[in-house]
Length: 275
Ligand SMILES: Cc1cc2nc3c(=O)[nH]c(=O)nc-3n(C[C@H](O)[C@H](O)[C@H](O)COP(=O)(O)OP(=O)(O)OC[C@H]3O[C@@H](n4cnc5c(N)ncnc54)[C@H](O)[C@@H]3O)c2cc1C
Image 1 (tube, rainbow, N blue to C red):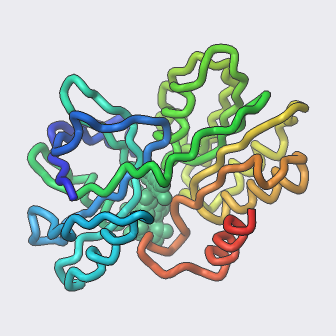
Image 2: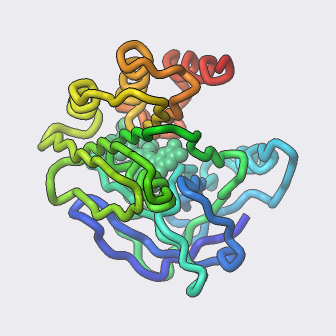
């Protein structure tokens, strides 16, 4: 499992920090939009994370068993992030970290990251590659944690594609430029000082914007309960079939990423398998 070394850190907005990494394996790094990585964040007092032994299997789960075999006090914390940009010329990648107030290990790490700091990396794995399906119109909805995925999807869309995006952020200062050749109808939804995941702004914005007729495909990510409500709305009121929606709960209110699944998480997982 390769290490990632920080080479630069700079703010993108007041609450998003971009960290540039170099490391083994970034010269022939495969790229596609919405590339998910697992970051292994070292425990306090461990400048370099204790990494699981490299193991490969058909389902990509052997590494996880090796990870869990690391004694708990040394085991790095595992968090999912998205590659915001890949720079083959400098063999580096950028990851954008949303800095939330209820900070867990990843946010604390990112808030104080400095050149020379080190993380572990698992991925990207083609198992998690989910290309968008062909559609007359694409719909993206998410909060600031989904901006890297939405931005890389938008950047890859060919000219002539029609896309609508709803992105919830705190305020204008948190908006980011998004490059695309698509015909993009972009809605920034401002939640104001309400903490992320507590308001209904994103859902209300999607609900109250008429959805054009035609074959649509929706991509939704962000706080898990909001994602579930958006998906329900798209199925029950916007006429989308389950198979026309990619949805991922990126984070859960009051729960860390490594807390066990809730009943809702399990129900969602069962529904995915049934689809
Ligand atoms: C596939 C995937 C890709 C992702 N890509 C990105 C990305 O590119 N950039 C990014 O910033 N995030 C991304 N996320 C979300 C990120 O992994 C979570 O926000 C993660 O929980 C942050 O870890 P943490 O250690 O800071 O907090 P945790 O220890 O997981 O949680 C601690 C507390 O913080 C709260 N919390 C977690 N995230 C947020 C948040 N965003 N806002 C407010 N409260 C929060 C939790 O409810 C909990 O109470 C992605 C998630 C997934 C599954």
